Length: 325
Image 1 (tube, one colour):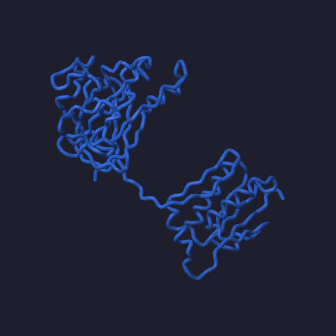
Image 2: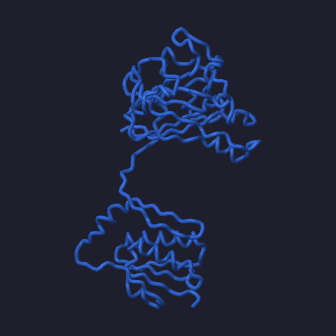
Image 3: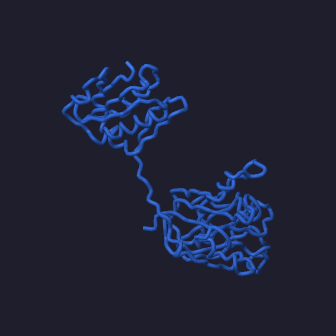
């Protein structure tokens, strides 16, 4: 029996079908079987076929998956039949436990083809879209760090959709001012032009000729993101992470701590590999807590740079995601 046909009647019982098929495909005599899935519910039948197909792909067998709405057609030529439908002329309790939570499901498959039980959970997805960067603009406050001296590396380069030169670079070296006698840490403020519930942001750092700036120089290593919805009030931001308000809490002048973030550490390869360089060029994504309030204004405070000089910092591009509605 080279390619036995195994028919499942009631294959919409996805978890049961998955467990049986997972076992069947790991038996030499059955690994290339014809799996016939039959159910009267087309949606659940389709979902079961997807799961069964993933099992076949993961295990690398030559098994085939067929679906049927007609029971007689599914049974024709079957060598084995598995009956797994539920009997009852009423809505079973499993609708509460299975149908509603099945909107999102997770299972784990290891390299040997073992498949875990499927965890189903009802989750309300958070809507997000990339915020319109054409509405972004600098919002300069007295304690903000200035732009690089030649006028080419301005803060507005951070949202110009240009991932090469010229990037955003602060004054270099940063000079003390009457409003901010201590040059470090340094920060800059901008207006997103819209109030939004933020979900994440992606940061691209400077590359440079010959990749000279990759995991080096003024790229931020550790930083704080601050935000607020009302008109910004200036203040000297906390310089010690131990003194920061909790995430979601505010400074005396109303800046909400959106989180302390760190860039991934530099890979151990010397020199860096092509994959390392590409990872850098792809940018790094950082998530905001879902419990944060809506904000419009952002203040980026750099606490440490990768080069360790801590007298300037630079970034290439930033995209911010969230729900502005």
